[in-house]
Image 1 (cartoon, one colour):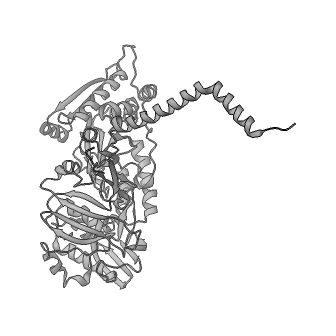
Image 2 (spheres, rainbow, N blue to C red):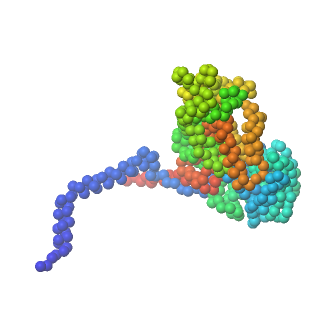
Length: 552
């Protein structure tokens, strides 16, 4: 028997269509509807205009207020300070955990007791003018900073240096004045080229017409003091080379940055304002969260016999619902940490639950010190039957702290304390702190990157707290050590800080890196270096295609 395969195939296909034609039509209709829905969703819900295309840009634009000078030695401008980090390098620089690492320094050894450091510089580093970087540039810069005096931004650091002993072009020894007041932080300042200036005095005099020459990732291109500063990528940079260029837009007010972003005149900026989230939403910007150096915390008045007990302080810490304070008091615009030091300081991780909210644990600890609810009326009494009361002091011009105080008031009352909140104006607030007229103080602090917190333990703080054991340990963080030693030292400091429970951190506040809608940041900057990692940032400009309207 002979089979006609083509005829059979056609017959089978016809039978299949007859049987399943309705299903096929439905499937095709669903696909068409789905594709149409995607188009509608993109155009109407996501507001993606099919006529708008994006084009990658090779230049980032930042905002700056008026710059007094581009000379970093004599400038007092915050913007010049940050811009200089793009152009210059330091012997050492800060890591993301605020430890220090070599920048121009290749390696180093320290003598802690004799207060000196031996440094070997990196080889083959060139200034933007093509000259070679060497030890003489370091000595020249230190002398220039010290010569200009206390008006300069880097004088406090350089003034700790006694002298720089040059061994050869790549090796030098730096002596400090005081073994108890020097650290690698003292060597974080921009290094300038000696050959470019006749003397330190000549460098100091150059202000209006100063052209910066550094070793940094970006180099000077042009400058109009009323318009903009242009920086190009340094093709001779000794590290990973930037692929983008930078324009610094000079604005009458730096607060105009967000308005300038709406016309693509500025690409991004950092913002610490509490209203930044609503601004980003309203203007369709993007924002990356960063951790600021602004910490809110509570202080216990140890002149009060009740709070002189370390265990009572710990019991109160357990009674505080720190997560509710963060979410309701600070609207989740912060992060929890174990101490008043920066989160993850020097690479030491935070558990964030050292005194995690635990009312039962609080009652247990307080009972161990003789404070418990003896008559079951919901109130704590001491051994003599007296009810236990505390007052909280807060400034009334800070909404976050007031909200935190109210949550703490509720927490402590639920643990049996009789609580009163003193919410007063700034002048009275400071007066009461000075008089130590409080039990628990809610306050805050903006900490410099060096994190020299010795004043928190030496009695010179506004609340006159002194702890010689802690101070002795904290002092080591401001002596010459290696980066690894600093980590080890802080680990011990942290243990003691947590155990003492004198300072209880509420949160470290967040800040934001805000960019145009198409902005992307590969790596984030730091509060102390707002352009750090900007070589990993990018954005795309929206291009609207013109439609050709033809008459038919």
